[in-house]
Image (cartoon, rainbow, N blue to C red; front, side, top):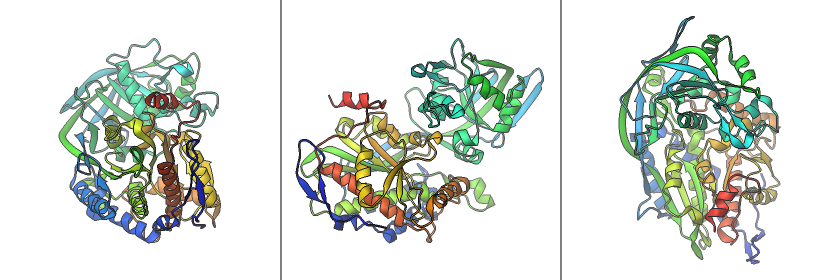
Length: 548
């Protein structure tokens, strides 16, 4: 691995032509052994899976504050490191059945095996009886693509059934939506939001592993037990009464009542003449909830700028994971340690903070170090911060998000998620050249990772954000090795108790990437220019308006 070497960096700003010497000694403080120690601590059984509003959270926060203080970061929230994030925790009893009734007979769909269902409404009981089922294709209303799956349909009181992802992925047509790359219209979050806007009583998404980007076990694990949400004034009454997923096999049984299966339904959904299809059946479900209100915490430290302290760079990573599962504990291991996801990212945040603290002089702009909560529950901590920022978003120059670092060795490349989005990629590309590395687009844009981590909450507010993943081309073992590592992680450890720290990990790749992040952030924090989204990006207009 080629380390970042001393070089003269020309600050890329028309207003500034000074040359600054890259602080190599500070960058060299990023070390694999120290990174590994931090990951091991954050992913230890002692922290109980870092569930929000749990005993594990208390222990995690204590560790982070101790580290922030040791590093020398200032409290960034009214004299404290903590930003309160009010949450409501709704735990649905798994003793529920989704009953589908039709003239051809009834279907009883079991929780966990056939379906996952819940409500975001803050109510102890939800009882739905005889809600008419309607297949609405992809459940998308996208005027810019001249696409409306709900056209001519009144869904009041009805339950909509829809496909995951979007038509571009299904057809691989680059002229349709964004081709293979998922748009926000393909995300489950959008589909539930749109169903609610349309007035649907219930909303069910058909699971397909390729289109979703993860297997059914991820669905059944992630949507079981406690489900956190931000507290809203109306108790989430504007959401559908119930939301959920159908397994592929269960969806075939439900669609079969109308002479369809998932593949036939997909073909119809892609026809220009598509109209919603009544399934000739109704859905009934009773959901019993245990409701607990709580307050979780974002942990935010500050390194104050030496020249322009009111301009900020934000470095972020989510500290939370899925916590404890008592049922899995009966079988053996019930702790979701979240070593890669995202003890590694938080450890990386701390390593970067240490590197900046090693500078002889603070950068010209301020740097916020934000460890946010409840990412696994729907990017809630970052959403709360973006809606209630500690500094105006218009004063945040740019940001970096880390959600899973490289654990399998140095690579020739580094992957940008959402490739082609912003000028931050140019900064990354220039820094990567010093390591003889290249910047590449993600292998699987169809999985929608761009919409699945905390940077998205800032991006949609206009703040340019950089989000990367580990490179694929291992320096010694090639691309196939890197792809195999990613596939094995997704299959065997992602959102499972098996995501544990292993002392045999090769963290040289993580150090390599963190050095890049340090170089990019250091440059941003010392120059005068403001990077923007590329022309044509949907977020550019939002950014431009905020800067006027």
